[in-house]
Amino acid sequence: MSDQSYSCRCDHFRALLCPRVCTGPKRSVRRHVESSWCAYAHRATDGSEARSGAPTKMEWTTAPGTGPGAELIGDDLRGWRILELGCGAGHNTAHLADRHAARAVGIDACAHQIRRARSRYTPQLSTAVFRCSDALTALRVPGPDYDAICSVFGAVGLIDPDHLLPLIVRRLRPGGVLAFSVPHPFRPGHRPSPDGSPVPDTLIVPGPLHLPVSRWELDANRWADLLTRVGTQSVRIMEFGVPGRPPAARATLLLRAIKASE
Ligand SMILES: C[S@@+](CC[C@H](N)C(=O)[O-])C[C@H]1O[C@@H](n2cnc3c(N)ncnc32)[C@H](O)[C@@H]1O
Image (cartoon, rainbow, N blue to C red; front, side, top):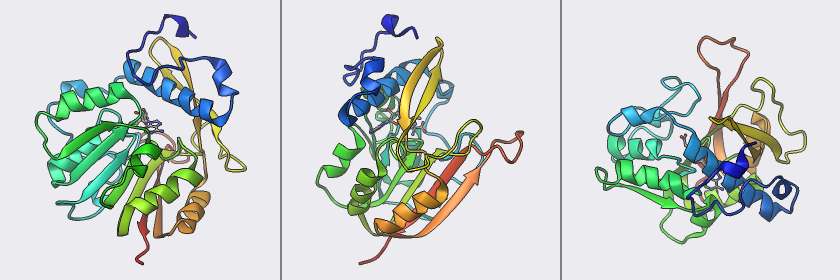
């Protein structure tokens, strides 16, 4: 790994990429994850620089242009308060605000991602707000309930769901929607965690730099059980591959659930 030569300007990039951190207590693992994601933010490009304005479609999968768009959240999102956890450079949050007139908030633990989102979208979009925050912290900030909370390969799956899901559900209004995508636990070379504990994964960015992260790689039924346990219903499970690859090569797992009415 060429970690030594890597220089990051992110506020969260304090722990650096020290392998010792991986084996430390849980708190250290989280700091380590933030560090890898910040390094990822600086190195990975998503090809969006050439595009002007917010994307015309919300993307939930690894194959842009495939899968549902924002209608997965709801048919008419005008005025909806929607929180995106782990928004990265803010494209989906911007789409929700721009194309659906939602009051959208995107949060990300990496300050560099939030700087990218703000410089790209804040000047044009008054209804999209971007904040640098860990997802657990953001959900604990008091405020009105959200109509929907979403995550696109974002914080859901990167934080212990036993901590995250109850907080999400607490911040949704009754009937509010939770929708999230995660890398498919049966994507080539991977298997779900047998006991629900986090498993190591690697982000590979130009360099090449191999960035270790932890993921809660749960199979669809385990996610559905967790969602039901924390008080959501009508859980929908969707799976997507990548066009041109064998159908068995699943890439994205997408779930949608509704907070039960009180
Ligand atoms: C694979 S990127 C996805 C970004 C964006 N949702 C997208 O689809 O382009 C994962 C994002 O989650 C963020 N993230 C990781 N852990 C987080 C946490 N605990 N709280 C908030 N954001 C987190 C990372 O900084 C990163 O920007």
